Image (cartoon, rainbow, N blue to C red; front, side, top):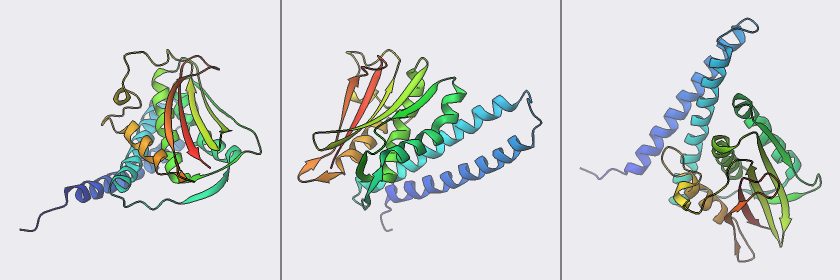
Length: 218
């Protein structure tokens, strides 16, 4: 019998599961819209909806991870206005923040532009924000700036920050522990003038909690 490529089978299964989650989200949205105003079950439905959105985003992330790890992903780098890119990220993630009574905002120079793969960075930012949702007390910020020919996109919160005991594998861990690995691969996939992208775990000077900084060469 021909040997099966289990990674391809798993990737296909994840793709099908992602489609099913999408169908559930569509049905849940219809149910939410059919409820009368101030219905007692609305908050429960929102929590379920946000959990499904997070699961859907994780499936997307795992598919990208499979392609990155197997050299099957073709990087699509383009020029983006960071003000528009970050605004899109906040819009997509705001409901999840609101469900936990957290403020989510972004800050960058209105004219700042950068070169990167939009799909990968959308997944990385989403992963980092979902992680920050677990630890933030009241606020999360997504910031962007240019430092020494690197575009730096950072996700910061006002939680307790990183502790001395935290190892890389503990940070950004999802249910499978692949969150940080995906973020690292996505950053390092960006190469320009022999410079490779990378991550840094830091303390947020503005909020006092944790800060994940993604450095992308320009």
